[in-house]
Image 1 (tube, one colour):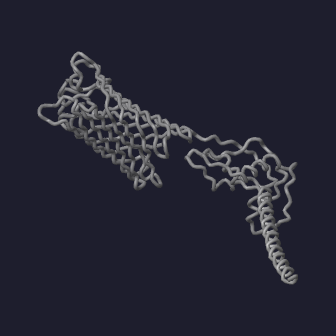
Image 2: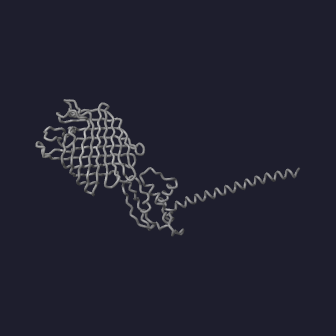
Image 3: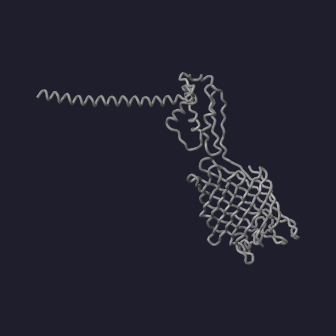
Length: 408
């Protein structure tokens, strides 16, 4: 009986001892692994990694990890602890006996170099190449990101012009010369706010031997200002307040007719809308542009010349007319190849009592830096204007031009 009790006791102790030694072995392995991980982390802090500096100085929303923040504090507070750079770590000629540089021989500057984020993304791939080697005397400069961008297109061209007989501003078929200027001043704070401004100026003159009344007449005449203020909602979507205002430079005349069909501030149109903008930008900028959806829009039409008010849907005796409605605009540029591009401007407005449609298309073939050809197609519909005889509200304008051009 004593034998059985002793045998049972020893078996239980053996099982307990096996469990105990297994636990001790597991804890020993865990501690050694944790110590190695901490050692690797501490060792990594002793290596100067320029990518951490580049990541910390970008203007995007990327956050540093705990290890990266610790390394950054080490670089700034205790540079004497850094024993080697990331280049040394990956170099084939790396020698673990590399010593830390003498801090007295290194010129430290409180000014650091920022990555230029003018294109919207931080080019981190070049960050390592601009970092100095240990012991180098370097003068560091701050590069401030550019929040404003300026660009423009300028044309001085000759053209063949076609205008339908019921064109609302007048005009006739002829040969003419035209100047066209488009300037853009756009603000982007690289975070959530954008403010785009575009000024379009077009003025063309024509002369026709068959016109014995008018020596010169305008074939193209436009002053248009477009402004958009947007706050980012999600990725390519922006809450947007848009303003479009337009008029013309000079009197609009017809062939052998002294009657004025349009003039400066006759008409003047202004549209203010509140809605959403969607930004289009494909790879390599082949297709770019914006779409503006505005369920709420205010439209003002003003005519200074009293004799023209009824031609633009304004009651006689008044100079202006206002209404509310909805609006859609699209500004698209498609450039599949370097020497060809298509610019399109689409404008739709309805007050649910009247409808206005404008679609301007410019096809450009660039022969050289300063020589190009344009085809301009402009269908238009406005059931608020006065119809000519029994013709429809549809109007159409087209011209082909060849001449000088320059783009910024």
